[in-house]
Image 1 (cartoon, rainbow, N blue to C red):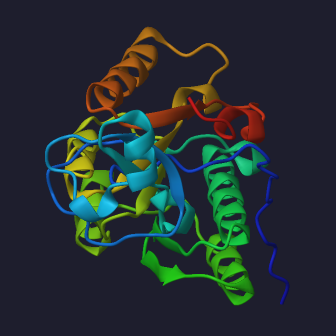
Image 2: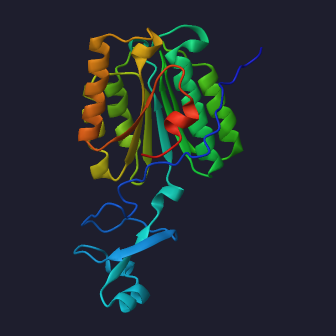
Image 3: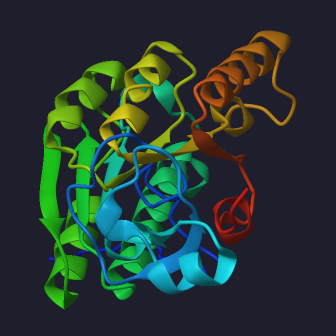
Length: 253
């Protein structure tokens, strides 16, 4: 038998969004773990841990300064690939599911090459789950998984997210790939920031895989889910049929 692996696109400018505990978000909680990767220092605010004070900078500025840690350099990535049949469209190599699988493979390979662990949930007819792991052997496992999935799932994305949330650890980043415009799943992501988990949604414009000129309802539904993501402060990318994937998802907003 022959296994055809999905296309892997080079993502030279790809960078994970930071988790809310990388030092960019203030918190009154004591940090559960530290990392030697100090990205910068900033003025002390009430609630910062004493052991994070950078004494040399404090002496130079005449006020307390604390270290900010770049935790995202060591963060795990959990990819959720939404394969519910109802959220995909198109046929053959021009189908939205092909784009989704290519994106998942490309993001996973780039993250593994950055020496980070990758986990994946693919919600096909049978839920495919790969726990966080890193290394060359993981590349083959994930590519095999993605080579055999289809858009034949029946579980709504909101349920998939709810089942995944307990497995996400503080400091992780969730990357969600979907064509769903049902805003129910957006509310499920709103708890991630409080738990110290970063999030990035790669949203496929399903209507563009049906017609080159989407109807008003499709445009309105897509605009509504993008607005909901923005309201919750969830970073997202939009990918339409024919887009260059590296350009569409490769940069940071």
